[in-house]
Image (cartoon, rainbow, N blue to C red; front, side):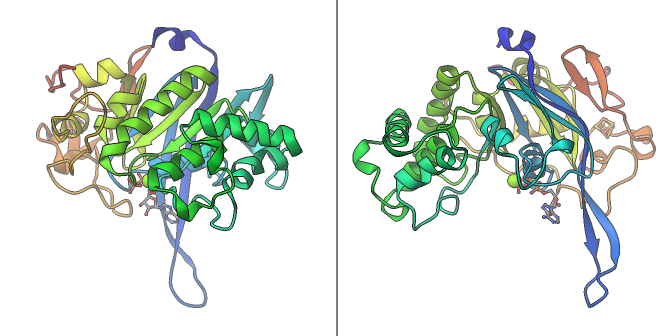
Length: 342
Ligand SMILES: Nc1ncnc2c1ncn2[C@@H]1O[C@H](COP(=O)(O)OP(=O)(O)OP(=O)(O)O)[C@@H](O)[C@H]1O
Ligand code: SF4
Ligand SMILES: [Mg+2]
């Protein structure tokens, strides 16, 4: 998306760190280490664009999304969100009173089953953000809920029903309606289709795309599936062991990846249609690293087919290749890693 590359950032993340303390068992529960789930991550998301975050299980994707949406307190770094004519610095937010921020940033989670209160009707669930933020009530609230519920592909006759009577796909539609009913600017979508049947994943991705252009939304779109990321993203961040190891436009990452790990992820993509229904198989070539016992030098070196001596000794910095592109690999300039022709 070219327009998005010039648009103002809705989200700016600078040197974000989220470390989880590791405590010993027993009464004293002394801190014996820490898990660096997100470690010095910086990026922006611009108005109307989708930034995809890809990486294997445990690399820190969810933690990143939860920090950005203020569900986790960050350990360090800056998170700045712009929307509704205001600038929100997460440092300055108050846990008890962040309703204005919540109107700008909404989250769609992986599991539509646990995301909805089983005792609340669709009308109450979807209407709750309007009520809590004092944006509408009574007949106006009902009208707004009815409008968004139809927009996500359900009908007004569903409004009085409860979550148990819906399929997984329908529940995710309800969750999307709940996230969008207050017109947010940024949606953090954490594996929003992973729990759904493969046959309906593509419909849901297309719905999210349609809603994005209709509401001029920005997405931080998290997935372990390269097929999904490929279908949804304008730009892609590749994460490994809590860090971004490569970033660039969707086309650059797919056609000319620079990092051997990106190549490994692309090789693991099953051959699927462009409708985004395929899932990433486990990336071949070994296991993701133990965050408590990271390898020396480049943390990817035990799995890297191109590793040289320097890779075992020196940590490669994440460096700019051009103004849109970053990579952390000592040998990025000399390697010819394989992309896919899309
Ligand atoms: N609340 C927590 N307390 C302690 N450690 C955590 C917590 N949440 C995540 N972690 C650890 O942080 C690391 C990153 O986890 P995270 O859930 O962000 O990964 P992920 O990329 O979303 O993985 P997946 O693809 O499986 O969802 C993991 O090692 C995980 O065990
Ligand atoms: S720095 Fe070395 S080990 Fe790391 S990805 Fe590059 S070539 Fe592979
Ligand atoms: Mg996750």
